[in-house]
Length: 315
Ligand code: XIL
Image (cartoon, rainbow, N blue to C red; front, top):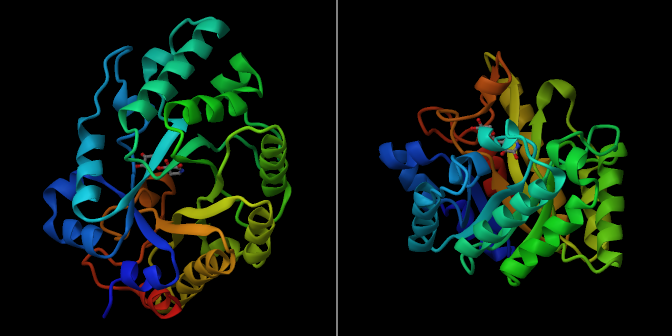
């Protein structure tokens, strides 16, 4: 059996996973698969703001650098995740009493310092993550409230200044299919491009749940972004279900993964397909969606599930 990364190379596609740094340190089977099956990695948590600047002005890049080194040793590219988000912000920031001007300077600094620190070692940056509500309006966040909607364009400009060669992405979920939210992302990136803002790509997270029914028009949706000349990527794929899982559900899950990869393979500029972890042994799903799980390609004993076989055949 050839690993997914080799099969994907024939399609000029990188196949990726989010990496949990404690699993990488403590679990040899995890480390082996992370290195052998994938050609790009994303930090599941250690590049988030709360992790790299736990106290204002005190940076901690140790864990993030460890992942970048792991990637380098294994011939993998790195997706940087994430610069601007409403979540996992340090508490000094969210509970601090800052003026709008100060927050703008804090955000500018965060983007500049972070992107500079990793300069030349990050392939794609998720510059702005999850800025929209389901109805396509901008999400209420510290950034929108304090800086106004222009924070998005500013973030891309600042990131580009700090590392002109990194590919800069807008990333979101429930945008894989057409609808008000993906329309809003489409409008946003069209406008940014027209205004000369340095945005290179759109990431579709790909967090699906089989209980909602699988989306049908993902390929058409990816295609319209592709036609804008933008890169696209599946950035956080997993397909969850209510537990316990049975064979029929695992087959539906495989079909969910198949459709996500299919949308990517059909788009000319879809450059990577990343799963949000590869084993049910370590997954954010049970913690975030109580009663749900089994969302990954391998089970908790590292046995390949039908979804893995499906991707293997498809690549
Ligand atoms: C999740 C991580 O997987 C969890 O470990 C953490 O507790 C919360 O964040 N969208 C994103 C990711 O962009 O950063 C999130 O990751 C999952 C949803």
